[in-house]
Length: 469
Ligand code: ARG
Image (tube, rainbow, N blue to C red; front, side):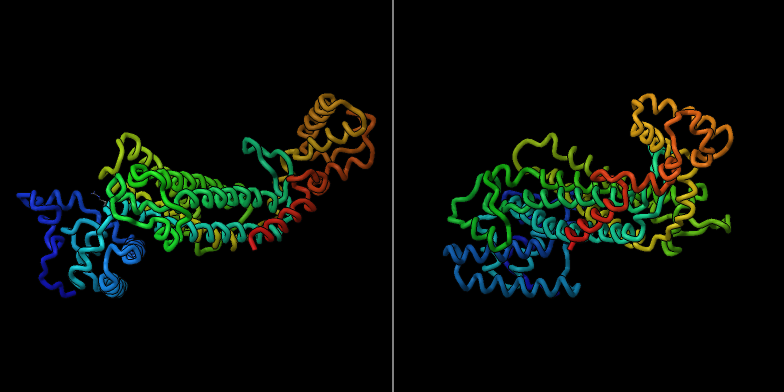
């Protein structure tokens, strides 16, 4: 990049502010205050925002048509320089905004210096972050939909695959593997709803707030909002440059979503352990051990679980960053970017890898079924059976507890006790009890809305597929 000598004050950061400054920044202060190392990632949003601002300035007669043409030409060149890697980012120009503006002025002269009319880096950076985050939210929403589809597709194969449902990690009642997976689909669909809601509040335009108080130039904020696809403008200039609650909200959504991912990851790890043996994950998501030749470790799932920690940490960091700030803009806010960027990157990669991994899961149905047979998972069904024969539920519960005790002593399942023995607990018990005591009978019986019966689960799958398109 050739940067011609110019009268641009930004050409030398020591003089960037004004003639008031009598000494240059030390190298340490320069490094400490600069953000260009990370905020250059906002370059496209920065240029889009600048172009929308410049076009409005021209329409309003604040800059000349020729200035606008020069700015557009310069920005087009800057875009190609950045895309090709030819652009030189300068630490001494502090941030993405000053780097781009300085280059623009170097390229087109005075028009570049007119771009900042009626604008401050305070409303500029707030605009950039919102624009950038909006795009990321859209990408994440698509990934959340992929994640749900991957789960629904596996579920569709397993509406009749019985596994133990757990409470307290103790075998509780039989459920289908499909039903279990659809629980996560519900969680991820709420995550998507939450993201869509955050998008609404993120998608408002700060530009026009200028440094903090608004500006005396006759800006058309609504037009800028419209051209950038914002739903509206921020209604108070002080708030516009100051608050980052959209970032907090996003970060909270991301944290909740990572908690859901983490729970799913934890189950994959458990299910793959020899003690459960419910599933296998493809080799490409596992690693071996350098010392134990027999090992296959579910590293990807463990990392997904672990990475929830950093995302939750970023939420705490951002909340703490905001809490003591007086109105309006404070440089503290420059610290919002790295946690936000890392949150987006972590969530994006995690959703992609988890969706892929879940899609390729190998289900060991026989092991799931054998586990469901172990813990007297149909005891509630026997109690319900007795209630239907006229016993009060508490009495039925007690009778079944005795039956389970005998079954444990004999080392058999309830369904393996002879009819005569069962009738000893209650004479109302008939031959039809054995259907009730079977895993499949128990599964099919739970036909309430939201229950695990295959008929309901198939309906849920249809509804999800319709919603996900
Ligand atoms: N790099 C700054 C940030 O990220 C841009 C805004 C700077 N504004 C200022 N008045 N120093 O927040």
